[in-house]
Image (cartoon, rainbow, N blue to C red; front, side, top):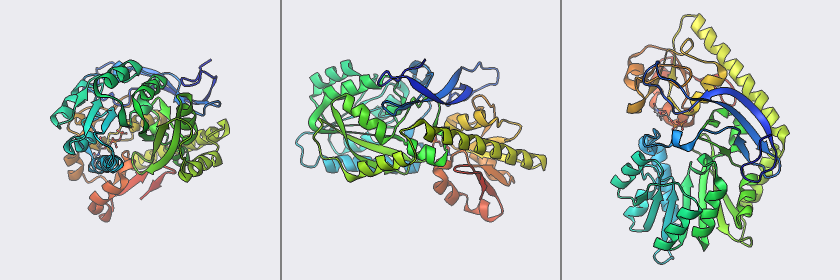
Length: 404
Ligand code: TYD
């Protein structure tokens, strides 16, 4: 029996996805051997944490060649600049403040803090992206964050006024050790905030493609409040973010007597309304995921039977889950267009669909595009105005399969 990584209680399995490859494990050649792991999703009815069953060792994912570089999307760059501005506003009246970012990636957020002359430190376990952060003028330490590293940072720099992390907490299996570190490093009256894909959005839209090896946890206000409490911290605010298909930013402070905003109460109520505190909420989710996969595959089969092409748009990490679980391979998708140079001419993990440069798609007369990067729909629809105006169609699939 599996037990919860946070509170040690028995877990209930929500879904099994079969053997999955690593979401970012794009292949250079079809001869390469792929690492597969049995992917399952579980729920803890004691602390409400949704989590993967099996995980992949972090060294296998965040090594010197971690492929995800934050600064490739304009919308994300704007989003992180907004985060930096929020931190600066918060620190306006603090003398000599200190900001720590966990998983600072290429410095997309912290470079603004560095430019403002604020004392800061980025913690980044992937050496290649840490180098990019350094080139962006950011102070970086290449390591994993836990209680021991927090003690060292505290001894060297003092406690932090702000600790933050975007799309990083959901990746860290030993989250209790991170929170132990936060307890050490966060100043009284300081704030921790972090944001990750929000399980409420995932369940509401059935957007199960956020579930993959790198995401060990799928947070809610319910589960984060419990996690904070275990470490003498308190969830004090929540702010919904329109990125990654719906993320939540959680604000946490030391102690248990802080002012808690109305937003926390309202979001937790919404979570309870769709039963995120109960296995029944997740059973409905599973049924709806299976229906979407069936409908999508049938639609693609119909298009292919007519002899038409289907092009995928955006070789995202999350499409690894969608394509493998729904059984959509090179027989149904001719190729995937992507604008990330190091993904071009590679193949998708597990399904082996070739990835081609955007220019190839621009010269193609294909009429059907599967919008795998659906989280960038607004940006992509704006960019592909002419394609749609001339009769080209996007297939989208959350919360249901639609041609638009
Ligand atoms: P991303 O949003 O990071 O999703 P994930 O975390 O699931 O990988 O990935 C978006 C992908 O889509 C990335 O490979 C770049 C690609 N992309 C395009 O090819 N064209 C575009 O216009 C946009 C916005 C993204």
